[in-house]
Image (tube, rainbow, N blue to C red; front, side):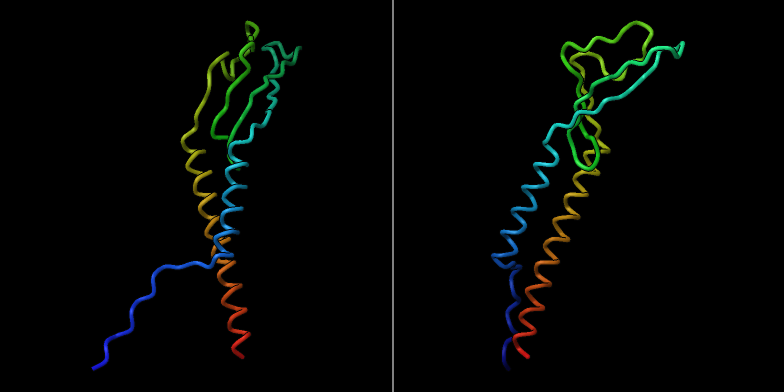
Length: 124
């Protein structure tokens, strides 16, 4: 009685691995790059507008935010971030991680599908 065929190990093509490497690099760059976000607020009287400058990191959700070291909030204006204070948002971190995993899986599936489709056309 012949033995059953060996199970194939999980393998990906070299071209898929290279494309995944570039996709992962782009996702890391997008999450680490610093973006400036300007938040406008008004006094309680509603006469004067003040801009809050906040630097954010993370894509597509801002997972980390920090303000300038010399940022002083005038009295009577609600604070977004105090000087030397940062905010780390765990929900946005989870959303960024899930987005990255989803995009990597889509790239992997698309590359492997294109390779299998091309191989099937060559057989015909």
